[in-house]
Length: 256
Length: 256
Image 1 (cartoon, rainbow over the protein chains, first blue to last red):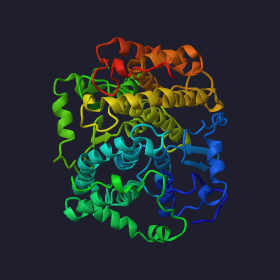
Image 2 (image 1 turned 90 degrees about the vertical axis):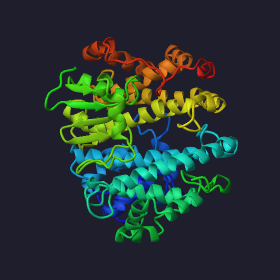
Image 3 (image 1 turned 30 degrees about the vertical axis):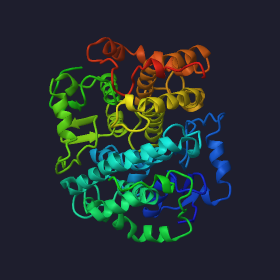
Image 4 (image 1 turned 135 degrees about the horizontal axis):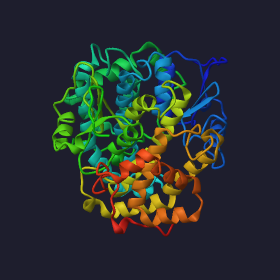
């Protein structure tokens, strides 16, 4: 939703990649919230740059953000994807009441998806140094990608399959309590990006039938009316040189 | 505090290392909470193992935890360090009210310390695969450690120095709002572990005077009466083969 109002949210994130900002976007879209997205303003690079500048000391209430995504809501300037989602969750009807055990459970599920299927996937093309190019760490990237596909990917997919088979997930395709939460949106986006980067391994994983509930969740999120409309719109950016990248030589898949 | 009561917390974590469990321990100790610690029961390995077993589907309310630390509180079984801390924070007087912007800010500060000075430090001795021994990835570890000390460590220390210089940190040595929060405890533990692993670099960083507020916070946490008593007790475990390890060949420090 593109209309800005006085109470609207503002997402400050790099233009040109879905990145970590995409988790915030999906929550705002599914929650039907009005938001301004700096990735679409033409001033995104400058706005992100100002937030993370080495001389930014923040303001009276807000510490300087370490990195985007940054979410502005009224006077609050929040950062760190899981912290933003924990803030948005109850406000958008995408998580149980804050401070409850349920809120902590949803947070933990989202954090586990981010750890395993976002951070670790990113590190597959940057295992040595985020400040170096991929081309400067290709050999190590291949070694890490092989380990990820053989060991880590089945571990994380198997974990979420178990969560979905467990009683706490409730009825239906969702991770927790029989209703859609932001953890489902996070897992969807992590799976979508991993499908883009590790095509062979993810095709194999889907065909194997071992993670049937995981791929059902993926499809169920994709079919949500607001998500479907969003994914088909020009607000959804394609993958390029962010977390999820397609390097044919890293697309190892036979070992899984 | 070792006394268990009906409402007591139970920390389920590996014995023998401080690890990620230490962040939960420090919060419980500073908050004066009663808790049982499986690391001290003699059954810790078995209790952790049962939680993360491949056939654990959780219970009616709780998904199976992905990894320890796990915190039991009544019927709730919570995991993921930042999710546990967000749950404990308001309950122990170590964070603003849940769902507030302040709670999200404290969470983001803690997550940033964990990302940079715990996860990245761990990856310095396991850059390729957590399932392999350090000895199987020594060359890559040295390369990553050099980059960490030259680029990442100054970035994170500099960031927290800026936070502490900013107005939102309030008066006194703390990161947010002029009062101790769990983010301070997390940063303390991350600094303490990094000092253990990267001795030369951290000595250089302290002597340089560039991060004076960061090291003042470290000392201020260490001087809190309950923390001081805890650190001197046998409840505090020494570093060994966990996140923070001392390998002389990785203790690179001159480049910083």
